[in-house]
Image (tube, rainbow, N blue to C red):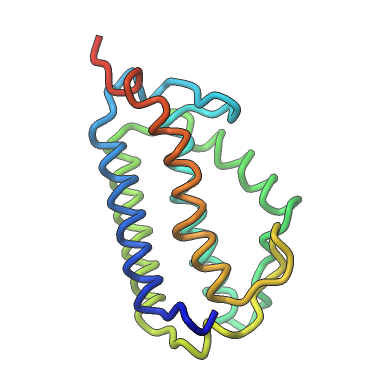
Length: 164
């Protein structure tokens, strides 16, 4: 992870955030309700799910700051959180989604602002991908996770953007 510093993670996060925000802003209202093939959630739920991934990072760092262990990012924990998140976000409006995105992203930026490259090298929490450094967990959750979901959303672009 030493070749990927906090400045690069910050830039990559901002790019991922911009792409997600751009998609949500341009999506037609009916497109937000469109189910994402192979996912089972709507476009609005997948966007909110990406934001919740960012919230998981915040929750993890808040736990560490209060002396609690960082929660696991493993299968059972992620599955339970995803199920609750899908129910909670099923009726989010575009405005609610964008407001949540801005609020959560600002908190992430705050966390990234005080992390150092040395912290990125430390062992991270248990994840779906096995042992990873803090930096690898951050990049996976803040950037690559969003990119993976955006690829599926962009595949729907023509239908999601249609206004009819």
